Amino acid sequence: MPLSCPRCGIQMPDNTAFCPGCGWNTAQPVLGTTGGIRDNIAAALAYLTFIPAIVFLVVEPFKKNRFIRFHSFQSIFLTLAAVAGGLVLKLVFLVLSLIPLLGHLLLLLISVIVFLGCVILWLVLVVKALQGEMFRLPLIGELAQRQASKA
Image (cartoon, rainbow, N blue to C red; front, side):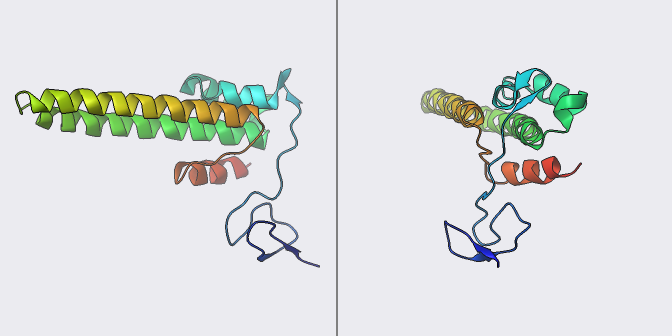
């Protein structure tokens, strides 16, 4: 008998972990210990910089754990998106710096907002990883989910 999604009520196949209607994760990962480190700690460490994320994708016991792989890929993709966003901001800053006083005030305001947004996003991702959740960011999370599912 097919299961129904507790969030949207759509009937789901028996062998799926995600609802085809709303994408809700119906099977939370079972967290354990991989390589001497608890899975949620390893996943949170992946968000420190992209270096631990790359290590977790290459080193043997970690690269087989889907939960750690997901957070590692999401961390790497987020870093790439941040670099691309930084390049776009450089262009915006270049244009705004041509405006004498207002441009510099706008530069300061944009810088503070972007910095606070990045810090808050980083904190949310670390906390969600520590809670054992596979919290997916829009677009980036979907890419990370696909990559983590590949073995």
